[in-house]
Amino acid sequence: MTFAGTGKQFCAACVGISLLVSFSACSSGDESGGTQSGGGTGLPPFAQQAYLKASNTDLLDEFGASIALSGDTLVIGAISEGSAATGVNGDQGDNNAIRSGAVYVFTRTGGVWRQEAYLKASNTDAGDLFGVSVALSGDTLAVGAMLEGSAATGVDRDQADNSAIGSGAVYVFTHRGSLGPRGLS
Image (cartoon, rainbow, N blue to C red; front, side, top):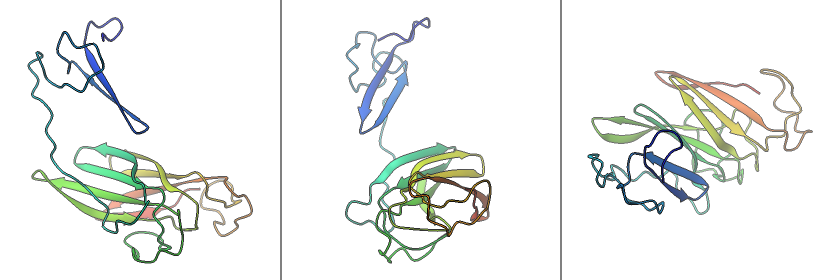
């Protein structure tokens, strides 16, 4: 397929609920939306660099539900992870908050990926789906929890009042050595 007005070829592949698009990565004859890369364009084919898993992999955690990549930092949401921990690097083994969600921060150094942080909401509750969306820009990470239920309004208000079920919240983390939270709801 050709991208409108550019004459550039692209391939698209649907993976789960994400659409992957690679410009100028199809051979000139491939307009099928196949999975070729590099053929006939002078670009090298893609090669898998790493296989990443959560540090507390568990049944149906949905690790990979959301991802954001910026430079050598990769953030991955697991919306059904069930730990009742809060904040940064809490107790990953406590599965008392089913579908509360978690976010994992990986960094790459010299081509090697390692987990740097395990993030939870500052007010973890079952069913919040923390990590349903993630956005990373420089040293700032925003994490969505679309079913968080606080009735708070504005910034940094009462997170303990769960009278607005499913109202949602966004949490902002900034990188200070290791990721430290600055909640925003």
